[in-house]
Image (tube, rainbow, N blue to C red):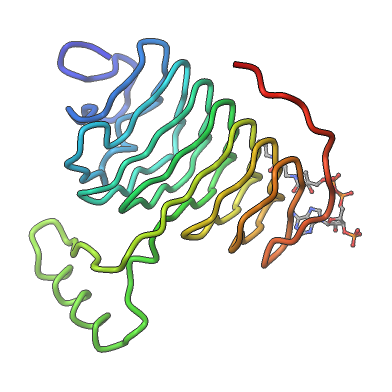
Length: 197
Ligand SMILES: CC(C)(COP(=O)(O)OP(=O)(O)OC[C@H]1O[C@@H](n2cnc3c(N)ncnc32)[C@H](O)[C@@H]1OP(=O)(O)O)[C@@H](O)C(=O)NCCC(=O)NCCS
């Protein structure tokens, strides 16, 4: 990242927002990842040591949202929808097309959805901020999430857990287990290994 917060290798002519904190060893493939980013808080996204985000990763982060990417966390093309907090632990591996969301954004009531759709259509940036209450999500250290999986609001995934491809995770996942399916259910336990500091 240069002084203008641009990336020399970037195909997209964007910049890293001023309130995004990037460790000097971190890697961002493209600033296109920030085209839906609206966080107003310091550390709206934090990249810790050697954390990385690749093409396809989109930070759809609302004004109060905060995303943390732990040391060596690798996000290989996820959509991160965050109005409160999404924490990704050290050495977590998030595969392509994963959705991590701490809010559904849309109300269940169809009349309220109409209002929101009208607001979005008529606003200059074609966005209407959600009034839904977010529920933070936490991805523990050493977690591996397979491609196309969805992690829904309020979920915590314990250390070392594995989430199968195309799973829909609606409840907490115990550490050192493998879950899969829709809704995701435990299919295995894994031997516990201590995470290194
Ligand atoms: C979750 C996963 C790691 C499990 O692998 P595994 O431990 O070898 O599991 P198995 O293939 O022996 O399957 C065990 C059971 O879980 C089911 N299962 C496994 N993965 C599943 C999935 N993604 N969705 C639904 N069910 C799944 C199997 O059908 C099997 O069911 P059964 O016992 O009724 O026959 C693997 O299936 C997977 O989804 N890997 C994703 C890899 C990936 O995304 N790579 C991207 C590169 S980062």
